[in-house]
Amino acid sequence: MDKGTVFNIQRYSLHDGPGIRTVIFFKGCPLNCEWCSNPESIDIKPHLTFTPEKCLGCGRCIAACPAGARSAESYNSDRCLLCGECVEACPSEALEMLGKVMSVSELLEEVEKDRMFYESSGGGVTISGGEALVQWKFAVNLMRELHKRYLDVVLETTGFAPWETVKRVIKECDLVLYDLKHMDSEIHRKYTGVPNELILRNALKIAETEKNMIFRVPLIGGINTDEDNVSAIARFSLKAGVKVVHLLPYHRFGESKYKKLKKEYSCGAFTPDDKMINDLKGILESFDIDVRIGG
Ligand code: SF4
Ligand code: SF4
Image 1 (cartoon, rainbow, N blue to C red):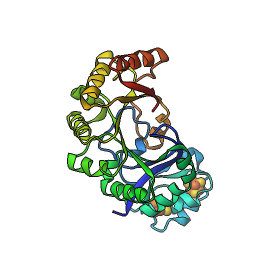
Image 2 (tube, protein in one colour):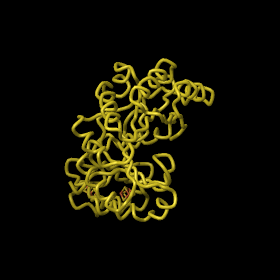
Image 3 (cartoon, rainbow, N blue to C red):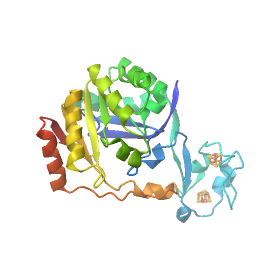
Image 4 (cartoon, rainbow, N blue to C red):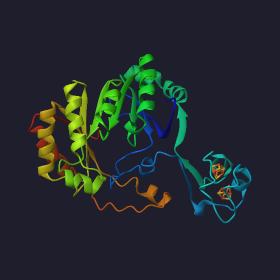
């Protein structure tokens, strides 16, 4: 597959794998975590948003639309081609397209802009999401092209996909950043929409391949920050032979995006304070695990 849907390309990242990296965020995710800071990533399709407070009422979007999807009173999403012409025409950024269909060669062009930073820092490209495994054929094609250009490739994943898919994708990357959210399957299902058995099974299977893997744990205050859960993560890490765990403290930065998407932000979690983060770090370190805060 030569084209995929991407919702962000972040340059100069220092927290998503070694060195300086470009992170490509794929759209589409089978999970629906209550605390998600990228709610625009869940749906695989691009999404057109409208912020009425910014609208000047100039009508340029209506004139630009090739599909007659816009009028002064309404927007007909069934007619919309998601072409982005109205976004281009709007002088006040009242319209925004979340997500873009891009080809492998377009992404390579973006990524190549920072080659000198990758080379000087031991960095490269990280494929993230959403969940990149949803568009796994596109991910594989992109990763292969990146490797042909001698670029380091990291996959960040929830691991929620059939093993046959996971196996094909991890073969193409140099490091897997693997998310672990909660070790209790029912609690996992309650807050993410899916149970955790498949995720844990896939993590152990990746470990068997001896692929370089780091576990990443979002610390969601009051949801997965209890000692029992973190101890269970430590034991699972030892079982999988994973020696490095990244702790990513929860923040509410994504909250404003929910309004734009006309979704409700229902997460009642808190941001862990320094003491809590250090206590949880200490639990993992007592199992001889190397812990980094923030990745
Ligand atoms: S994205 Fe294209 S088709 Fe959809 S409303 Fe805008 S101009 Fe019309
Ligand atoms: S082009 Fe932008 S500012 Fe003008 S009517 Fe359309 S949305 Fe409003």
